[in-house]
Each structure stands twice: as structure tokens, then as C-alpha cells.
Amino acid sequence: MNKGKTNILVVDDEIGYRRVLKNALTEREFTVKTADSGENALEELKNQEFPIIIADMKLPGGIDGLELLQKVKEKYNTSVLIMTAYGGIETAVEAMKRGAFNYITKPFSLDEIILNVDRMIAQHNIIEENKYLHSELKKAFGLKTIIGTSREIQKVMDMISRVAFSTATVLITGESGTGKELVARAIHFTGNRKHKKFVVINCATLSENLLESELFGHKKGAFTGAIQSKKGLFEEADEGTLFMDEIGDIPTAVQAKILRVLQEGEFIPLGDTLARHVDVRIIAATNQNLLKQIKEKDFREDLYYRLNVISIKMPPLRDRKEDIPLLTKYFIEKYNKRENKQIIGISPEVEEEFYQYHWPGNIRELENAIERAITLTNEPIIPLPVISPFVKKEGENNTFWEELFSHPYKEARKKALDNFNIKYVMNVLNKNSGNVTNAAKEIEIERQYLQRILKKYHIKSRQSA
Ligand SMILES: Nc1ncnc2c1ncn2[C@@H]1O[C@H](COP(=O)(O)OP(=O)(O)OP(=O)(O)O)[C@@H](O)[C@H]1O
Ligand SMILES: [Mg+2]
Image (spheres, helix red, strand yellow):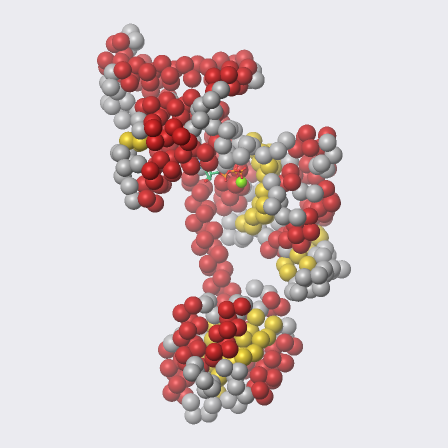
């Protein structure tokens, strides 16, 4: 927290104290509000956050300092410094018991106040930092949750571990829902910046002006409505990582400024004259075709090359269907926990459906389908009717062949073969109620051979499950 931003609320019924404290603290660049009673202090707290309150013990009206302290502590993350008149030691001790940061007796010197305020800020910063790290760590657990054993996803994981410890800019491309943000987090939280911030900005949702002020910050008065100076996200992410999602949607004017940060490591906040230097690692993501945008002059070529130092392409789910069973299992466990259910798996028909489906929304779509199915059903095995509304198969056959034709011969052959293997084997397993021995007999191959196929595609049979 930087000093200029810190709000302090001074609560005292004596106007003399309110004035002295307000002047002294404003001079030190705090933003100070005052209240003359406990009731008015609580009103102020409804409008604004105050990390620090300095309150007199004796206040007029129904709420004295002690009660105010209690109410504040119940609701807000605020440090309270209590002022007492000479002789009020006993109540001061009571205030400490109820969670006051400290107390000082009137009359006090301004140095005493400043010393206490500095210590309160230091403590507040530690608490905020901890909260931040805690919440990020929870999300960072995502690291171990990049699920998949397919060659395609293994390549991505290899790439993550190779680039995590560099500061090179990374461009992650891929269809919607393929895990771009997941990968960006994984890079940050495995690398040596993991103890610094991972800051996310979605460039598609902000207007040009807002985007600029978000990224670079602004000085008080830089434009109408800029009532306070604001730190930009580049500064926020200093020494850490800035994840710029939907980078393809950035207006060209802002692109030029971002290019400058990438080239010089510096930028100027709106309305400011002084350049700020930052050390930020950029990870950008897009589901658009930037090369096409360059041709259409919507994206700067020089920025593209700056961003694309390392490029990671997220494979669509339809290109790594062998990961579907693992992902399914993972999401079933996830939503079992949340919904407090004991669903074991999906029926063979659902398995088949999942394999056939084109997954335009990729992993997010799979996750959503499972989430909805789990909230809807109490069957131990999710049956087809529960899932089929969420996976629409129209025109799938055509897309399947078109898709195949778009790949080089060997890749296409592998895909077709995988598809055939899974369909064929699932069909015969279903007919034999999951009995591998009988299934193998029926299709005239060795049991071990069938087992190998099942294992390769993570298909469950009654015996191998
Ligand atoms: N390999 C994976 N293993 C487990 N979960 C995954 C995997 N990939 C993606 N997910 C999950 O799928 C969802 C979508 O992922 P994410 O938000 O990273 O995708 P995205 O590519 O950023 O999508 P969009 O382009 O729509 O923003 C998230 O809930 C994420 O945790
Ligand atoms: Mg995303």
C-alpha cells in the first residue's frame, strides 16, 4: 500500500484534535477524513475503506470509542488507534483486549501519532500481502491440475517448465476454453517470480481510455473523474507477471505504448511527466489469429514479434481426445466434492458421446457439461440422457472428415485410427457388459492385445477398472 492512497479516519468530538491530526497527517500525504461521533464514523465506513482509524475513547452519543472499536473489528480489516484522556488507563487496557492496535494518552506529541501510524501501515501491508498470497496460492494449485497425458499436452507442460525461469515474453494462442490462463498461471507460479504478483487484465472488456489508465495508471486530475492518483497494472505487477488476456483486442494506439514498455521497460502514467521503470514479465493470450490481424492492420507487426518470443499453442480438445477420460474423472471428483455427491463415472454411452463430440468450447465445455450433469443427477453413473442436452452432435460427421482432411496424412491417419480403435472396442465391450475376455473372443484377438488398446485410450472395462 502506498502512503498517498491510505485513508485514515479521525474520530473525536473536539474540533481542535480533529484539525491538528488532519493537518499533520495530510501533510504526510495521507487522505484524512474526520467524524465527530461514533455514529458518523460508522457512516463514513460504509462509503469508503479505512485501513486506519484514530479514535477518541470518549465520544458523545450512543457509541463510544470502545463500542466503535468492537463494531469496526467485527466488520472490517482496520487497525484502530485509541486516544484516551489522562487517567483512562483501565479502559485503554480494555481496548487493547478488544483488538485495538495501540493506545496513546492525551496530550500526545505528533511524533507519537506518526510512529504509530507507520507501524499500523506496516502491519496492514503484511496482512494484505498474506491475503493476496493465500488467494493466489489457491489458484496456483492449478499447476498440478493441468490434466492430460496426451503428447500434445505433454509438449505444453515441457514448454512451461522450460520457460518458467526466464523472463522472456510468452504468447499463448488457442481456441476458447483450451486452458490458456491455466498455463499462464502455471508459468508464473513455477518460476522464480512466484512470490511476486500475478496480475490479470482482460483487454477485451475495457474501452481504450479505461484500458490505458488501467495499464499505466494516472495522476490525480489527469482527466475528468480522476479524483485520485491510481497505480497502473504494470506497476502493480512490478517484479511479477502481467497476464494480458485477449491481447488481439487492444486498440492500435495502446499497442504502441505497450511496445514501448516491452522495449524500454518504462512508461508514463496518464497526466504525469515522469517515466516509471518496471520489471514485468508479460504473458499474453489470444484466441484470434494475430497474423491475419496484422495483414488487416489491426495489430502491429512489431508488437507481435515482441510478444511472440516464446509461443505456446494450446491444442483443442478434439485433437487430444485420449485426455477426455482423465479430465472427466478429474472434473467428476471436483464437482462431487462441491456438490457433496458420490458419482463414480459416466456410462459407456456417455463415453462414446464424449469421444464423438467436436468440443467447440474445449475443456471449459467439458467441465461445464460434467458440472451440470452432477448437479442434476443422483445416479452413481451419469447416464446419457443427463449429459446429451449439453453436447450437441449435429453435423458432427462432416466436421469429423473435414477436420481429418485439414491435417497432414500421417497425423490424419493416426486420428482416424484412434477414433476407429475407440469406437470399435467400446462397442464390443458394451455388448459384453465390460467383460474383456468375452469381448476379445468375439473379435478374435488376444485378451492381452485388447487390454493394451484399452490402456492406451484409458478405456475402463469391468476387469481393468
Ligand atoms: N489441462 C487441463 N486440466 C484441467 N483443467 C483444465 C485444463 N485446461 C483447462 N482447464 C480448465 O478449463 C477451464 C478453462 O480454462 P482457461 O480459462 O484457462 O481457458 P482459456 O483458454 O483461457 O479460455 P478463454 O479463451 O475462453 O478465456 C478452466 O476452468 C480451467 O481450469
Ligand atoms: Mg481465458
